[in-house]
Image (cartoon, rainbow, N blue to C red; front, side):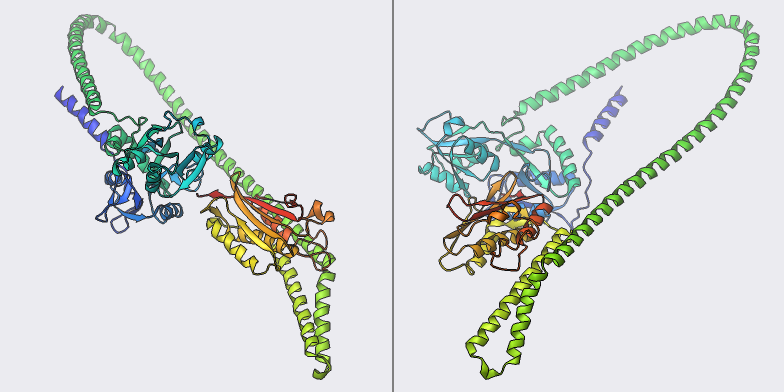
Length: 607
């Protein structure tokens, strides 16, 4: 019995001691764990310059269990988020976001963060979401919370420094402040803000997870987190922050009760086994008695042994026949298995050939479509641009011949300068037309590929506006409207510049007085950009086909008095088609004149 008990304990010890593999990290190449320099009490750099906080303590414990050497990489939150998404650090901790789930990997929730609303004492209590209508509410940037509060009509104030915001609330600057429960408790205690009251808010709690581009690392962490939760280590480390059971900390006596139940169950199993052993002994005694009775009948059985031997001989012969039949059946079965395996291999080869043929067919169709578009561009170029090309070329050649054939003293300096300006203008027009044709050909021919990267949208839009302001007609004003400050998105910078600059140049060419307005904001999971002007407006005959390829001599960058057409809108339309975006134009009815050009492109918004 003692030996069996030792086997049970050894089995339990082996089951509980399984750990995750090293995953390739070494002391020479340790795992880099990015932490926020100022995010107490979870992550921060203390007065001694050392990493501190609940996340730091828990990660030390987790890495030790996984046998992974690691180092901290402190930075500000914006840099840490980018480092994690770009793979410059191996691991970090973030609140789960459905908008980033396709660009990185999240672990299961370590803890859940619950929202609270903070108000000054003496204000109205028992706040519900509806009661926050028309209240001035401060909060850190959080898209789900922001959208919810906007729907109920709260006046939102986005803050970047939570410590300053809670002090401002205490001094009467806001009506309320929304933050996580652990932040409210930590800051009110640290700064002794006795006039602040806390109350839970009925918002969906957020999951606080490990995040990494290394999926194998996240899988190993998930397995270890399950074990650590069973052992109570998560509540032990995060007990002063939150817990996995809706914010309620499980007392230690509960774990003692659970352990007592386990031992009681084990003792019950041992007692049951002891009773089974006693029953087995009784059964053996009974069997021994039956054996004695069997010996008595052995003599009788021996009498029929000869008959049984004869029957055995016959059975032996039958067995030999059956064995031979079984051998033949086995050979047939193995042959059938080999044939089935060959058939399965042939089917797999046929399937792969069919897929390859389908891919080749699709590639051939794409090549045919590219060839058709290329031929179409060629026909358009030859059929519609011969005059537009000849006109500036003839002007350049004619004026240059005139200058070369005349004596220096037969033409005034002013006349000579005018001819040189005409030559330069026609050359620039010709270069502009050729550049637009080449740009359109690259986009339509699938040669120009777009690559998403983290982009500071505010900065890029400011640069475009600065370039256009230098070229505006006298008296024309260019305004930039940016409803969301600090906008960062995963988007192709080349796409953003080509399309936005085309629309700004369009507005600049057609606006000689009034103003141009560049507006951009988030819309339907992407970036919406609009350029509004008070210029000449959309030509009536081009409204139905303003984005058509070489639809008329007039385009958005040239007026009808010019001979050479532009291809800017066709380039913009082709780019939007390639990235599954949209583009459009309408009259500017808001100002009573001019036009509005807009586009929308799907993009991942990072903040």
